[in-house]
Every structure is written in structure tokens, then in C-alpha cells.
Image (spheres, rainbow, N blue to C red):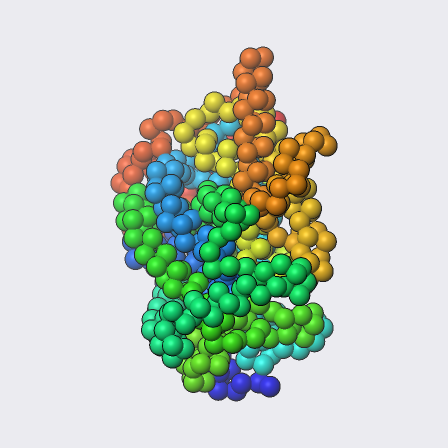
Length: 570
């Protein structure tokens, strides 16, 4: 049954942000949107407030509003891994992102693969980083679309078969069109509305709902009782509000692996490179942990949903309960129709903003590191921008394919599987910001080993809850770890995050091959960067003018290209 009041409120707010998305092409415009620096990085001139909302909207997504509470609802304390990982994240990346911003502004790099190309003079290594970023981003976008679909389903748009996904496709088309026109400025502007709505919903939900349900003690008591019940699919307890001996290692490795992965994602890098200067980034790295408080409060809504006896809506397209609908159904049951519509709009817009940024970032990778490198080396800035716009559409279609063909028990698994993939770029991107000791062929070998082993381990993970034999999640029992047929942890039920294992294999292989290459004195490519490049700041004469910027608009002279010419490599 369609909830018309909720749907109307949702539609009105959705129309408002859609109009903002189209108008954003004129907002803070300092140059020609036919250049990647302008379309894909917003002119590289966002200040502290815009960057705050842009990066916050980029990192705190449907993952925060839908996936984490759903994981607590279904599995308990494991879902709280998102809190320590966001706490340790910002101190961990504080210095590396500053160095990446500086070297990128000096050389005009648009993507992390651009940096790798310049650092090692290796087209192959840059290609691997670009492909990894694109592939890892697709399931992350899919997570956003899953969150949006959960809201639509709660409002009654829950058809069977392909028709069940039709409202999602409509929203996707609208997102694709205004992203195509306005580039990064669209999600940056809409992020203001998204965060204001989210703050409103969180404050009301966290104060009102526990009080209505008997207080937090009653909420935790109900959650403990429900999670202790055996799962019909496995016979084991569904979860626990405390960690168990079998998932403590998973919790630690998942938190650390997620922290290492987040700023390797191309959309996170895009938010950083769009900033005006190092001071803007410093202020944001210090202030963004405030979002972690919101994340913790939102996560607790998973337990609140248990106390409120929420039942997930059955997805008529698959015939199975959709755990992503937990929070939307909670709001639907406990709030009036108007406020529930506002809450649904907050979740929906909170999914569209990061989806737009992610598709732009993936499109930049395609354009700069595949199209221009291998298909059309003499591409003009206008041709680059056109390619990026088209690629942003293709990436969104890829994300929709994840929704249609991959059905994990918890949508958060989409992001965690993507994390396993993107972590394999850590040596080539993050470590290379400090040293070139790792040889480029060692990095290639490490990437291949880590990626192959990580995907193999993901293949081994079943999901009995949805009768899936493979790719059922990212938590692996230690007994499944094998090394050339040897099972070093045979019989152990302790779980570990696959991304942590795959990254360890990657680094070990990279170190060994690098040592051999250095011993044999194998050429390690030409480094185009200089130590001083990693410390340049706003106003430095070392900075390259923004491509496409007009005189008098913060960019200086017009520059046709975005990156330094690189010698042929590999």
C-alpha cells in the first residue's frame, strides 16, 4: 500500500535537491565545465565549509543511515566496528592526504592513478590503480542505491520482478542527468540540504524513540534477548550485544582495514583534491570526527528497531526480507507521516550525494588513466570532460547491476567487499607518498597476489541466510585460510576480515619482489615529483594553475591539460 503523504513529502524534497543539482552548474563557477578540473574537481577551490559538507556527504552515506543499523539489528555488536574505525581514521590520514593534495596541485593530478603514473613513470601500475578504483567504487554506489530503494519500498513502491526496481531506476536517471551537467558542484551544493535534514532526523529520533520505548535499558535488554535467539538458517545465535571470542579478531581487523581503505577510494581523494589548500584539509580532518558521534547514534537505531518489534519488509523482487528497511520501517511506525517523509528524504538524499561523487571520481579515473593513456593520447580538455560525463553514467549502470545480481544479507557487505579490493592500492598510493623503496614491479606483483587471494577468499564465504554459497560477506573463518594446500588454522572458528589478509599478502609479495629487483638493479621508472612538491601550499608559485579557470576567478591563466607529461613506461 502506497503511503501517499510520505511519498509527497519525499517527492517535494527530492524535486528541491534536483533543481539545486541543475542550478549548481552556475554555483561558484570560475571556469569552463569542459575541463576536468572544473567538472570533476569543482575548480579545486572549495573552502572549509563546502569541504566539510562535501567530504561529510561523501563519507557518511546510506552506509551510515541504513547499512550500519541493519547490521546491528541482525548481528549485534559487530556492527559497531564503524565507530572505532572513524575515530582512528582521521589521525591516520591527516599527513598523507596533505602530501597528496600538494603534489597533485603542483603537477595537476586529478586522480590517485595520476600520482602513481608520475611517481613511477609506469602506465601499467597507474592502469591497475585506476581499474581497482573503478571496480571498488561500483559496489559502494550500489550500497547507496540499496538504501534509496529501501526507502522507496517502505513507502509502498515494492513491485515484483524488474518492475520492483523501476522507482530506483527513475531516481538514478535524475541523478545521472544533473551530475552529467553540473559535475562535482551538484553533490557539493546538495550536501548542505542533506546534512541539515540528517541532523534534524537524528536529534528527534535519538531523543524521542528511546523515551517512547521505555529508555535505553529497555532497548538494550530487548536487543540482547532477540539476538540470543537461534537463527532459523544456521541454528546458532543470531548475534550478541557484546563481542564473542570468534568475532573479536574480525572486529579489530575490520576497523583497521576500513580505516586504511576509506581514503584510498577515488571519491574520498576527489573531495580532498577539490579543497582550496592544506589549511582547509587540516581543519576538516580535525572537525570531521564529530560525524562519528552521529554515526554512533544512528547505529543504535538498530537496537531501537528491535525494541520496537520492527519487521523488515519483504522485497517482492526477490521474495526475501530486506534488512535495509529496518530504519525506514522504524520511522514509518513511530513517527507521523509528514516527519517520516522528511526522514525518508534525508536518507534518500544521503544516498544520492555520495553516489554522485563516487560516479564522478570513477569517471575521472577512466578518462585520465585509461581513455587518455591508451585510447586517445591527444585528447583535448573538452574531449576529456565529455568522456568523464559519459563514464559517470556507465559507472551508475554498473552499480545498478550489483543491485540486480548480487544480494548480500547485509548491504554493508557491498562496501566491505569493495574495501577488500581498494586496499590493494595502498602500497602504490599511500606508501608511495613517502618512499619509492618499493619497486614498481614489486607493486604490480603485490597487487596481483593480494587481489587474487582476496577474491579467492571472498569466493569461499557462504551466506546461509540467503542460501548463497559464495561471495556471501567479508568475514572469513581462519580454518578456511590456505597456503598451497596447507591449513595453518585448521578447525578455528575465529573470523577475520578478508581485506586485512589480502593486504598482508600484497605487502609481503611487494617487499620480496622489490628486494629482488633492487638486488638485480632493475630500472624503477622515472620519478617526476620533487621532495618540495609534497609540502607546497595555497599561494605557492609551484602550484599549477587550475585547468579551464578564467582570469580573475582564482585560477590564473587558462591551462589546456591537467597533468604533467609522463615518459612512456612499461
